[in-house]
Image 1 (tube, rainbow, N blue to C red):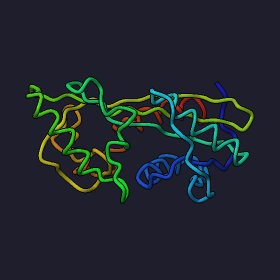
Image 2 (cartoon, rainbow, N blue to C red):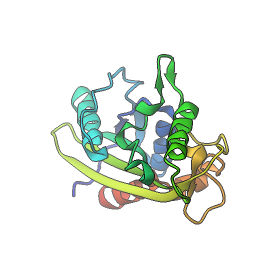
Image 3 (tube, rainbow, N blue to C red):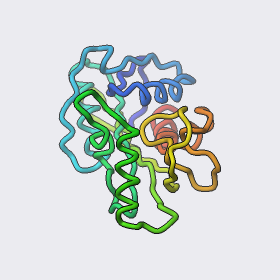
Length: 202
């Protein structure tokens, strides 16, 4: 496994919530980060049907365009009663002509569960694939997840995406209600991150 030895890293994302989480997770390692948006990079088409495949597309695109190592995250929520949907299309479910509307997307998920009369608990998991790519084409891939169930109505405004309806296993607060530091310690992204740190930074 290749170690990360530089001090600059491109975060291949335009998602402000992800950028904030990743910057906080990397802070202890003295790595200077710049986002794809800061560098004026386009968003490559995510044409794969797995989190890992789309993470690789984004990381390699950013590394090629900037000549710097790049880290990408592809993540989403998989709902068991919906056969794993929305999955890699999590963000797409929130798309509107005026930008992403996650309350709308959460209601869509819940309405589908209600229409199916899905039994409780309505289990789901957040999944994350992190890809660390170098300009020479090498990459390392790490995957993480956190199990839980969906609740309604939405609870909390501290998270982003589907956080307000996701209740992690064994917890009483949704990711939307939870202190961000506590969420970061148990999230799907934290799980993948811990594997990446152990493999490439420690």
